Image (cartoon, rainbow, N blue to C red; front, side, top):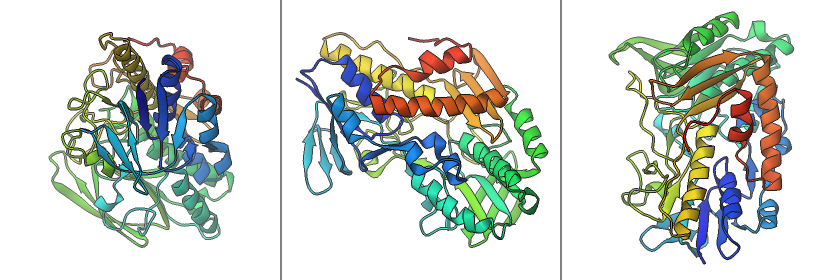
Length: 424
């Protein structure tokens, strides 16, 4: 009997648990370890922040759904990983041994890299967690009584830019519905070298289309932006040129600001010798296996992927839902094959596919593969994307509640976009 432990219960961890459980016989044990006892559908957080969703609509308890599928759950934080001894140290002093460890923790949010940033003790908000989104909503309700300037964007080193664009347009749409848009100047501030870069070197006509949308929404923007510090009501930004040299200094006033932070690996994972890169992301081979430890696999945002290109202000490469899904499937197949005495053959598909809501419309981009030149490279927008994301949200949460192990993107999203999976 093998004991497979999944560390993390997010967009990668929960599907990993269900798919591994479905592929392995009952003689093998599967356990999920997570610091909290709930799953949150992170892509819905922009809607939570403006009151279009309530917490209970995008959050679900996980112990009972996992138990129904024969998966154990431990709701404790992991304090350390003994990779040589194949065991975890948990809050309270307990230890948990494993035969295989699947790391799907997601990132540590590096607000501390910009003085004055972050929702806890800082002056900026985030939509990276449902708690952060609710914190924006609480302050936003007071803001609506006396509105003023809003800043939305991404800090130096950020790698997930889609939600920043998404939130910009959602806030603008919400303010229009409330007849307050004319009272709220909005500025988009991003470390990207240009609008629509997305950490991907652009996708299709993302630059032209997003610039046009920002203009049409009366949103000003600053790119190549290095946010250096934040004070109450004021953000300090150095705009650099193509060589990374300071070009212009900005002091931007705001009443509310949502700035996505750079990501790092969580402490317990980053502290394992030779497991991670200097940012704490897990270094894996083409089979999602650690290059140092043969019984450790990893998927999702916590995996090390090099930037698509060097940019004047550092940016990272995003890890979108389809990419995470294929990483998870690869891990499930490879663990099953190894337990059966077969060689590892299944690879994750490191392609980028994203559905972004824009309030009353939406944008979708597809980059296959993620690093240019690409076999598929397009960016489209329309009402259909908004509807597709709403439908996807409902389906994915239902999948988590029922323990469905089928790949969502491969079965539904790719077919809807007219794209077939290109690699095994």
